[in-house]
Image 1: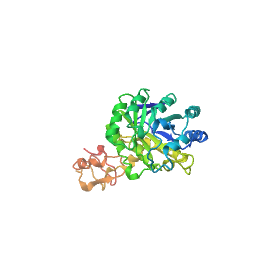
Image 2: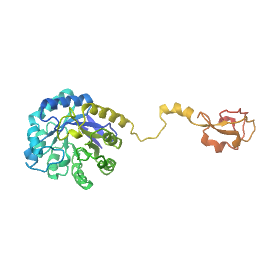
Image 3: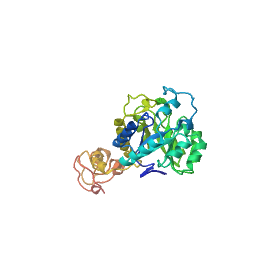
Image 4: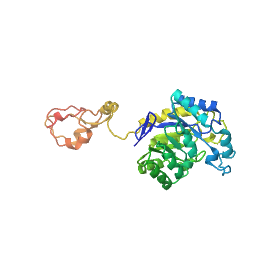
Length: 339
């Protein structure tokens, strides 16, 4: 299974693909948004992602408020959502400095508007179960990265069955809490998703306030990591508590790649181990002078370093053999010393 985003090929053996989620932490300010692109590039992120909100297309004016909002979401988006012309400009900036522009549409009309700007679609957790809209977006024949917060396996499977048969798919493990309770993370779900969704790449959208859960997700096999970013962690907003700054993003990218290098599954003797094995392993040695023609017994031999003689696990095969030569005390036994 492989998933392509521009020139990046994501597979179950690739380095993690790190998405800096700008969300609405630009507060509608294009200078902030462009600065976030620049900082994401400096930090080494694979992509920077924005959101395309058309409030009247995606929600009624009055919807329930969650704890992370200090004002109704509809009103917040009316004031802070980027316009299509803003997204076109941000895409141009991304192309110029060499970082992938991604964007989440929150309605089919929004998807239509950004279709020519994005290589793949990112679908948020709130839209994961919106089958009618997903069916329409599938017709654009682009890969999808779909978050799975606030859902159960049956719901994920329904979406997986629909999408993975039509377009390449990344499923993002996610908990839609802002910030997440660590006891709710259940990161081993990543391992389960890898097993039960073989046609998808599995990633992790991290709503914690730190980095260690992303590192844990990478260890468990997540190949796409999405993390909210903010220019200054003191900036007030609905995503403030789950956002990292760009120094932390740089650490995420660097350490994520290092972790990825450690995840091979072949147990073998590596080249740098061979010289250590030569002195660290045990061989059979004499613990007294042993004359020629002596039938060796346990009182004649024991195990000591280095590991360059007869391996110590051969002890039972050595006992009872006759010596062909005189063997001095505290010497390595060699096969040529024995009949």
